[in-house]
Image (cartoon, rainbow, N blue to C red; front, top):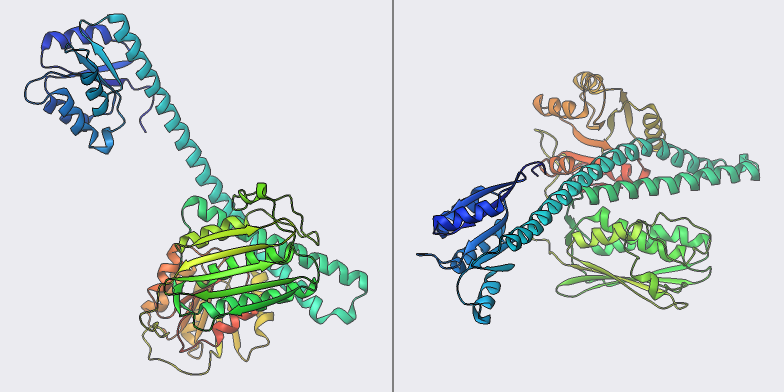
Length: 520
């Protein structure tokens, strides 16, 4: 955007030099540059080179008249919004005036010209042009501020996820395995820590998602997947939370839904949000039903609850960011007001739609509809760099390159239940040295941001030296670059922090099997 201190440009078009001279004398000023053209063709060429705030053109000109020139000018998107005033000595009859307006004129000036009227009308359009420039500058500044906000928000959220994930994991271990050793009071304290860390992780994840959406870096990673499994898994996971409120949740899933191309983690997140909300706003001992079916064109998923319903005045703001309804959660659960916004954007990214039907006091039905993109062929097999296919039962010896000691401790604890040998390195160089001396390692987990040698450098060295290992990138923020790199390699996958046991189990059991991207 050009600075507003530049002079605004006005184009005058007339085949008679004396008319151009007269207009220039009337319109001259310190804040403007007057450019003249003696024909329609010359004016069109000048309009390509310059940004004009206003064009004043004669109507009657040889070769190409003013009407024809404006018609051609308007066909170029760059020029379609330039104000144009016709300057004419022809009849003031309505049919001629109408023709001018129909061709795109904003006003008419009739000869002989009144200098005061010409100056007054020109000043209006110059003022409007300057205001437009100011608005454009303000818009650019706001966009820059928004980009910086999303950048710092993403960085802060990324840095928060690791310690929160560790708190969440180890508090869950204490709740599961140390219940008999704790007094009721201490057990309650740990429950508070666990529920608070869960809420904080969900909030951080939602802030990350909304920053990706607002910055335009939100992308899908579509893979061949079973929508049947997706729905059943989401229902199964949420039964744990429903059970705590004595809510019955059932799945009614058609068995003839075809495999389709979709972003499995993101649609899982959509379902978890819809089912989670149904649980959150339903009373104990009520029922929630999740239906899934398909026709030739669309997958349809419905989440139906017997909750409080939503007032009509609240429905219109459901999918707007940071908006909450007047309905309160039945057990005091908290909400960021971002979940449904993110869910709707994820569905829209699949070219689908999400809608709600609700009646106050009679529950709600959220319906997701997604076009079916059928799977044309089998996915590629997972193959290590430069190695032959390996169809053994799983990975047996692992290397974890991670400079965060808390994440090391978490992974060590999670992995202790698996029959694997684990090596740790604080950076890529240490990891590469270990790989060179131990040929039994068949899987590497690596962080990307490490001192001495980064994860990206380690991956490049593994490829360059043709080391026979698969690689899983550990990342707190999945970027488009990571997704693209994974899609272009048979042995590079990614895992989003904080790490959980089920994701690790899937990775460890996936050697030699079809690759499935993992993202929390």
